[in-house]
Amino acid sequence: MNSVMWTVADSWVMAKRSVTHILRSFDQIMSLVLFPIMFMLLNRYVLGGAIDTGDVTYVNYLFAGILVQTLAFGANYTTINLAVDMKEGVVDRFRSLPMSNNSLIFGHIAADLVRNIISAIIIIAVGFLVGFRPNASLQDWLYVFALAMLFTLAISWLSAILGLLVKSLEAAQWVGFVLIFPLTFISSAFVPTETMPAALQAFAENQPVTHVIDAMRSLLVGTPMGDSGWLSVVWCTGIILVSIPITGWLFRRRSAA
Amino acid sequence: MVKTESKNAIVVKNLHKSYKQLAVLKGISFSVERGSILALLGPNGAGKTTTIKILSTLLQADKGSATIEGYDVVKDSNEVRARIGLTGQYAAVDEYLTGQENLVMIGRLYHLDKKEVNRRATELIKQFDLVKASTRPVKTYSGGMKRRLDLAMSLIAAPPIIFLDEPTTGLDPRSRLVMWEIIKKLAAQGTTILLTTQYMDEADHLADNIIVIDGGKVIAEGDANSLKAKVGADHLDLTISKKSNFDDARRALKSEKIKVDAEQRIISIATKGGVKKLKQLLGKLEDAKIQVESVSLRRPTLDDVFLTLTGHGTTKTTDENDKEAK
Image (spheres, rainbow over the protein chains, first blue to last red):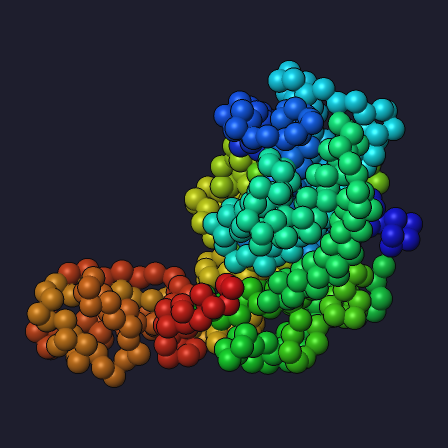
């Protein structure tokens, strides 16, 4: 086998490890199941009555926002899990093996994809229960799935950078939220951006999370797509392409210290 | 498999390594004969872990070179990694996976095929007395079990060379003996072993050859007997009856190379002189009218080795170790 094949094989081994971590860790399972349900119900019933979303019902408007927020939080696990690995002796063991070094990061990111597929299924089920009624075709759903995975990869790679930057596990717990909270709240996730002050609106309308949400919302319930489709793909791909070499460099730097 | 026909599996030449301003290795050289056990003996901060990290390709030296079975640890790092097993100071096991899953994972990362991995895993689980625990997540294991699994993981690909960084630190006496038996068996099967330890008795018990390092330098080298001959085979511990007499006792024995523990009122003296020397020492104390509460004879410890070889004990370098650990 050549080195690319070995990288794939090693990443597969590492992905199996990370997915096993999800299934055996009570904390991860709970947050995986509870957060999406909680956010969906809170927004739908507590805030929903006060928010005017025009032609679409609030639950139809909200669904894409909750989905993307959940995906973002799910992908953030790479920060914590990578920081844990770097802190413990286990990374030294991996580095002393004739394996591809990148596969450790690939493994965590693959686990994020699995985690987010599970979260997405839960969100969709809960959504339908509280009145979400999409008019998407099968093809639209496939696009939503593809975009969801692309977005997960983008956030995962950003999270990998954070996981390699943080010096402590305590920092790993909150640093991701500093990135994810503003991006998901100052967006079109929960309220139409026109209701925000001008500066926030300008940010909200030009940041990637809004593009991803708008694109998904359009595919699911038929709101206008505008430029959000291609913009979200370009943003996510761009983030991934920039993040990969940075994580590689950080990993080498961290492990040489 | 073996690139050179030299009798040495590991050759280390003039290794230097600094972390920022702090020089941890100041020119370490040694070699390890194939199939033998070498112990790197030294206190915390002496540079033991740094040496292991360089040899296992985790860290690059600033200067000097090291080869494993003829392969350079920097230039041929992948060849080196395929031939070594590393058991670090902290059990590098995955807590969420079972013992069996840990072994299989590492075996796959050594690029063994599935059948071979499963065969080896089953074999090692039996050999390391982990049969009942093998299907439980590792977080339920005791410290001793984790260490055994950790060692088993570095053996999964049956590498010809094993690095053991303080393999028994923190283990209870029984687990320690079990570990020693495993290490001796491995060497008997032809594995080359480089281990680090802070314990003289461990080096004495296991190693064919001992390298004593301190402050990043080799300060003595040889088998256990030749080191002991240098240090003095035995140590006399004299416990002085009264604290008020302790300083007088020190003065009375000032012509000897002594080590004192004022808190416990103990004066230790390295000696090869047996009973005659004992009589002479007790005579000196009696002349000074100092009462001795008890006398005991013991084997030299690392502290004694250091006192003899360097003139200082083993404690002064602890803060350097903190830096090394990072």
